Image (cartoon, rainbow, N blue to C red; front, side, top):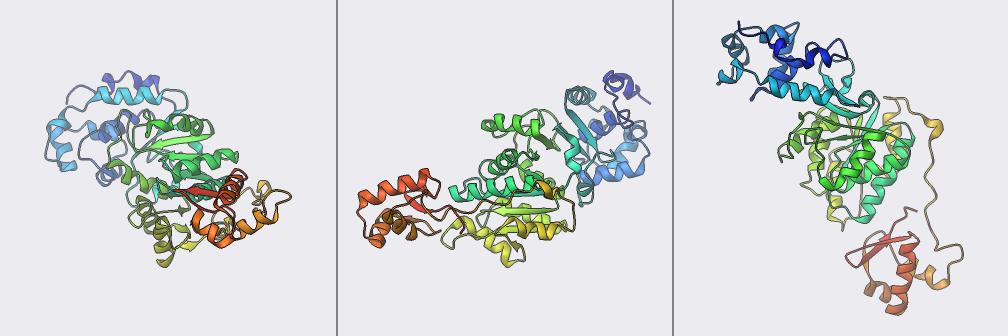
Length: 387
């Protein structure tokens, strides 16, 4: 037998903060062996009372168990990388959870391929709290972004943790909505816990860590590789009671998350949209396949209420939608507003419908937009309210 692995890891004792700390270096060592996926990892973990026993075997014996073609990597695990992981885990509000750790989220443990390790920055206890995943387009319409923000705020105020992927668009709007509602939010990252992707979300990541947590299955130093992001989707859906999709094109990655949620036996919700909005087609497809159509938060709560207990006392009912312009709108403002629907419309069409001049319509649209009654994108306008 070669040199005792533990003797090469001075951080093992220094970083010991739980009953699982002594075995953690061996979990990390196995995790860093190329070709060892969740299935192989699970097979090894269930075969040994401690992974230390596995690494005390000869390289040939380990090779036989793992059935990997290269024994060289097994003969000399990179303990320096393990030390680096442990050093990261010793940082303030840094956590490394193994699949056998009591703090590992129980719902995630139930999926077919749970990640053997989770690296967490922030409040790790939130991983075991009731969660709703929210996903959608990276390039949403202004209305879609507002819908995600509003739903996330209300969901968080009901006591659910809002879980998403910290991507551009709907993900970011969901996190921000939960934070604005004074609730908790989890971001599942496709990089190592020491990196933020996209980089422009560095400030958002800081807010999430302060009021929630960032979690990933990838060890420190892992760059934003494209293949990592579809993999993290199973964690988003796997930790959650259900997944809500807000705006998604037919080939959107959000539909992958929804499919995984369904396969994991979780609820799938979708917000419908205009038939003229290409970003609504993915949601419409989900609804045709059996996802629950969602118009208000009540549509979600009536499905999840039997599965989790929410803090309903703090629930804030949605504010009444704007159906007039200001406290004393003019007749012309009312006329224009009545001709604006929930489907995007051009100024020329509004001129034709209302009979007002183009200059008057443009001026009124600016006022309506400033008041939050309408939103614009690409020179087209539509209502922002739902009543």
